[in-house]
Length: 138
Image 1 (cartoon, rainbow, N blue to C red):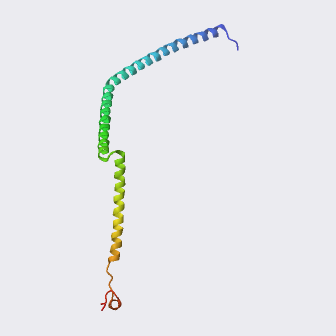
Image 2: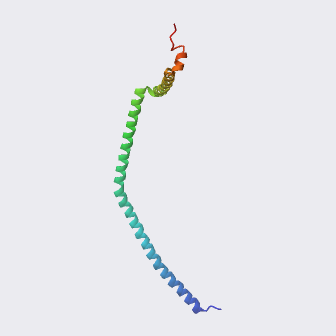
Image 3: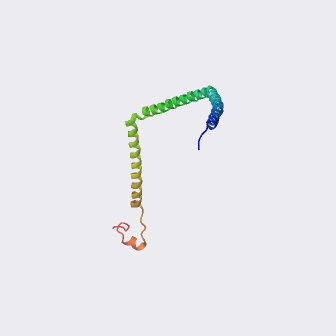
């Protein structure tokens, strides 16, 4: 197959037509993108204008809350340390609580043992006659 001048000319015209049509389409797409970017930028600026004060207020409220909470915690620990004498006072208090619990446990065991030892034994009549403690020693 051979190409003639008519074919070359027709191909050139087709190429020019494609370029022209493509250029028009490209210009339309560029306009659409410019408009979209402009609208996006405007929206971001307006959003920042609206959101920024609310975000600053939220930040300020959070900072005040954290500061107050930190002060309360500091006051609680200062009061506790003053009352308990610091870490060693706290440790002494813990050991005293353990000692009290141990003493109560031991006292409970001693009471149970004493009650078992001091519980009166009931003897029947035959046992009572032969028991040296219950019979009269003359």
